[in-house]
View 1 (spheres, helix red, strand yellow):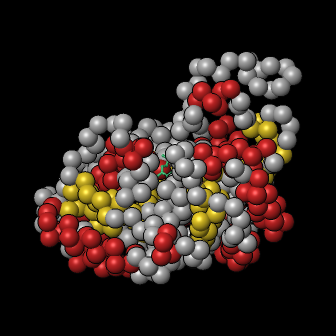
View 2 (cartoon, rainbow, N blue to C red; view 1 turned 90 degrees about the vertical axis):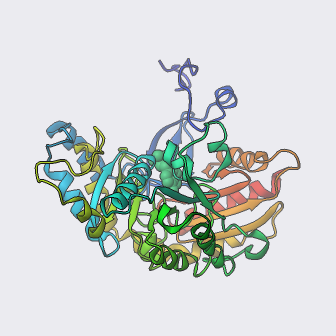
Length: 442
Ligand SMILES: Cc1ncc(COP(=O)(O)O)c(C=O)c1O
């Protein structure tokens, strides 16, 4: 029940909020009650410029008419259809539409409901594929330090963010981690891909030497690491990883939950970097964040390896009640149509240089130790307050919110990833406000 005067619920205690400092938040809650295009409306009636596309997901901006109408219509027409041994037209239509904009060779689409589920699905497909082709000893999964692959057990096992791992026991057996590539001493203030660090991909050869190539099923990386604080792949790194995985019969999975659907100015990072993985995980921008949905894209080689036994048998014992949910499919189709009609991936590309120059104008402001960018993503890394890591950036987030712009922080890194419809004046406001905030921070 809402309090009449403030629009703030009277009781905040029941909702255990995800990835939130619950006690601190509930003392001074920040609530959004509406959103349109580039802006949120707060419970106290203020407009807040969205510098983060929600959580990297509302790539077309908010409350876009085509998506809204498609969802409303679909709920009334076909609200749900069983996902197993039954189908409905829009799931097939959406899968084909995704295939048509996906990097060449990605011919098949498996639907999930989130990035985390896409990751679990891709890891399971990788293991099952190796078994299907007679490589059943390949059971190890390789991730990377600072990697974020969602919060389920497979994802935290291959992930590399300590806070997401340390509370949850032993995880999956046999996972290994490549070194991260965040080399701030060598690569600070790089525009685009940094020069240093490509050779860190060679660590895979050390793993092969130590464990045997016949034990390793797949490597999963974010082509550009988002949640760890926006870490670009060094020049040549992804190419090297692709060459090594191919050499040793290891699958390469790109986790494109953030980079998929235009964020870097291309449909997918695989296209942007011109490196072809075997599997791609997606979510977020697939439905513009409107309805939870994810998808795993697979090559024909992988898909076809399962299509062998008796035809009446289920080929892959995996799926979710809401895989390809009709309302999510309607949202996905309308979202992809909006991206296409408004040419938003190219738009992101054409705004990238203005974005880059605006971001890098923050160099020299108090506490700033690095700025990095690519497409419509940018990060400003701050010197932590001695003995109180994360506090300085979080204070910047709170102050920016008070001043009418939404940014996001991880550790002492400010990350920004605005909707792809952003205009130059919005960039000026976002970066100008951030400059004011940085000047006033302790
Ligand atoms: C690369 C990557 N993988 C997986 C996930 C998890 O997605 P979800 O929160 O939808 O489960 C995220 C979320 O930010 C992500 O950035």
